[in-house]
Length: 117
Length: 112
Image 1 (cartoon, each protein chain N blue to C red):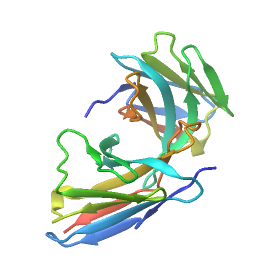
Image 2 (tube, chains in turn purple, red):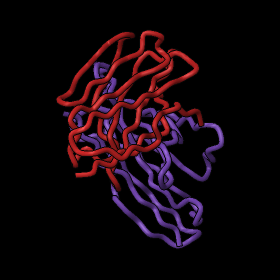
Image 3 (cartoon, chains in turn orange, purple):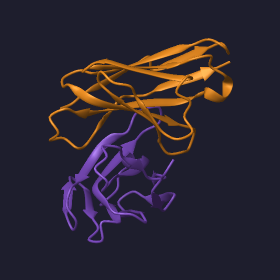
């Protein structure tokens, strides 16, 4: 089945630094990837839709300059949290859509827990 | 962002009992997905529903796509301790977008 690898699984960084999170589709080509943020005991909130070779589409209220998304290939999307602050601490999860269009059940990565101190 | 209403928010049940949860929306969806998330992990797909009225099973799990296309239901029969987790529904709006909107989640705890 489709597998999505997300790295790192957890990261602690100092306030003001930037953190990059990678999301890879291991056995399929992901034309579209999605980035979610999940605060403790809350649901997944979509941050942005990432399409290979084009600019990401951000949801309302998500700062595009703070959360930089790059989808340079059909198997890799990255999310960079720039100038991170403690309020950015959260669980970030990516998901990928199989480019064949048959599988509508998007596959999720295992998530990255970001702690900004 | 937009969310789906999911109920109940949490459930404490005895092992062996059946569980029911549902997800409702004020707008139409053309695909419903049910996921399970365990602590510190990403959600794992349980069941996908593509047509109104569709009833699909995956082992002890059964999910239905409501005929109004505004709701979906998930049932778990004969619950076991490993069913513990948070269950999320996710709906794809009928607008042709590939985005999914997630429900608020149902936290399930099973008492042995």
